[in-house]
Amino acid sequence: MPYFGGFGLKGESALFKEILQDDMTNPYVAVGFDVGCVEALSYVQDCIRFKHRVQKLILLSPLFCPLLDSVDYENVQSYWALGVQPTHHFDTIKPYVQNHTPMLTKQHALFLFEWEKEMFDSLKKNGIEINVYLGGIDPLIESTEALDFFKAFASVWIYRHFAHLLC
Image 1 (tube, helix red, strand yellow):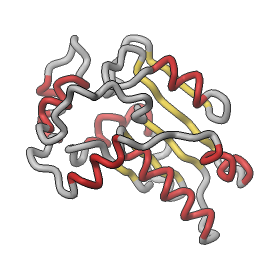
Image 2 (cartoon, rainbow, N blue to C red):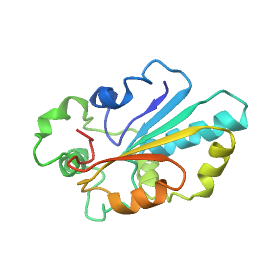
Image 3 (cartoon, rainbow, N blue to C red):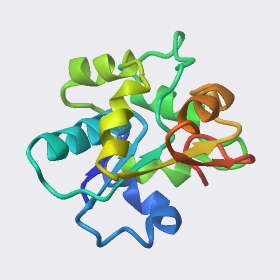
């Protein structure tokens, strides 16, 4: 299962083991979290272009209509402090946070990414299942707008009492 991680994190896929349990060993499923959703989408589009097999795309808290104007992207800990659900402690994700993010320019460009319905048309035409998971109290994205956008072509789950980390 190719996994594309979030901004400034490493190895955080373990946080999503309950959501991903049925797909963890499936090499034909691509998963993205946070800004990694953009990379997962690109990976699946490349698979289609090069006639490689892919069955499913899973997007976990894709950055959609980001509310991050006031966030200092170079301060990874401040970004993730915003994304942690108020009832959880930052310690939950601290082992996964990288204090320095390689290719920060590339990551910053991903924050500016705009989702378009047409991007998913070829996926649907090729029979690829699309699943999107959102946190209902996510302070980093507009969950309601993301739900309205993605439900047109994906199965969408919204965890009403969870934030960006879906836990």
